[in-house]
Image 1 (spheres, rainbow, N blue to C red):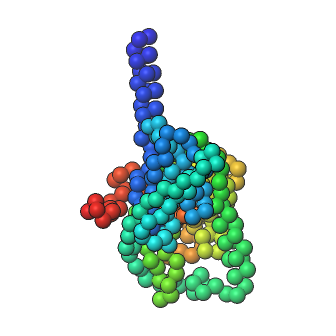
Image 2 (image 1 turned 120 degrees about the horizontal axis):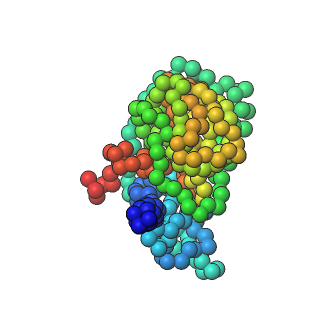
Image 3 (image 1 turned 90 degrees about the horizontal axis):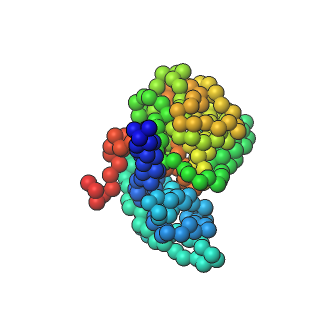
Length: 283
Ligand code: ZN
């Protein structure tokens, strides 16, 4: 009996302490995350560039977890914190980061320079994808400890500045993981499926809402095995790796979005995956 009680207490201790230390890493660069201490009271609202920001409790203190868009400039930025009708600003610094450049040849020219008739579809889909990434659902506990959704080789890093057939395109807004077609894709953390669809560039796509503006997106799937409204637990299958949409081979394109800013997915993974993510002063 006593043994069992000790075990229960031990389990409780591990569970509570793991919650307390679950803040993501403070990595304030374009495409990174700023973790900003807010004090001992939960503010009514925190915004960054007019967008609502995730807040979370850790060790009895509240923190804002802010996604920094890849297009942000290095330098001083500010959060607006509203509490009991009082507003204050908290300034923080975004450091410089130089992302690599890559040139890619895409054989399907239509996926680089779409036909006029494709443009209607692309514009419609841009709205659907945009509103999924902007979703805000209140959530008490948001987990920042993700598991890798697919076992495979990281084939293209987040933030890569890309040229398709010699033409500049937007920087890479996710992490590519190469794996054979049919490899299962697992939910990295619990959440609700907010959208699935087949899109011109992204192919078969799934969006998971993890709460408070933390959204993950999975593209180029061969098969989707969930539908909007489903809830998933960490490790549940959401589909299979494929090569639908604009691809050069089978892989998962995985994006993580915070306050509608696409951020480095590796920041949510175990430390062993975070090689190469150093700040200048840490080097
Ligand atoms: Zn990609």
